[in-house]
Image 1: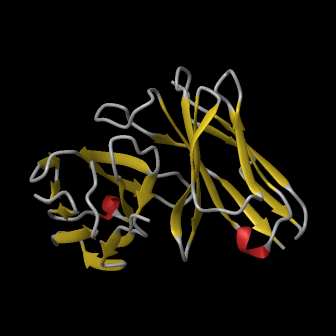
Image 2 (image 1 turned 120 degrees about the horizontal axis):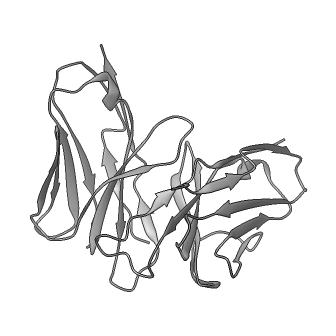
Image 3 (image 1 turned 90 degrees about the vertical axis):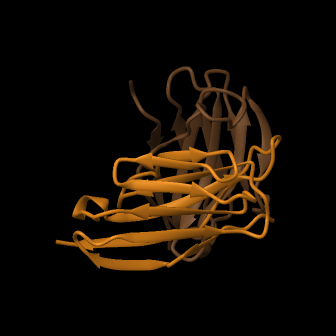
Length: 116
Length: 112
């Protein structure tokens, strides 16, 4: 089956611009979560959606936002980009609502964002 | 904020050696997961441990969850070059938590 698909894979933006990243989860998966990965901070949780509802949000400024559509596809948006937003943005999906054994999380390959 | 501390941060060993990676926290986790991430790819789940004291084996990899569910370890026997990658531990802090907290990872290099 197709895995988690993230687009675009690579992008370069200028400070002050905004960016939208897209994630298509595995078919049948209703939970989508987003993470930011940097060499210094590692993987940090951004937010998680289930059936179009944001259930949890990480400790990021309001410039970071997201949404989930009725077909479970998700987008995240970063406005007023800063140099420190340069990172690998990872999307992950899982089938059910909870995190118990058997509800495996699958990650996409990520979107590499460089802010110049 | 729940924190997971991983050690060592970097590890370079010869093929055939054994190694152990540690994941520690001052907080209790309802479950802990181990992932491996290769360059240019997303993390891939290796195992989930949920019961204090639990030990799981995956071929040459042995995972252990501490009795108090605050720490975990990953032991690799007879490491091979294909084991090279970034090993990450991650955990959910409670039954109602939807936020997966990650350690910063251990970068393992296995030299042929």
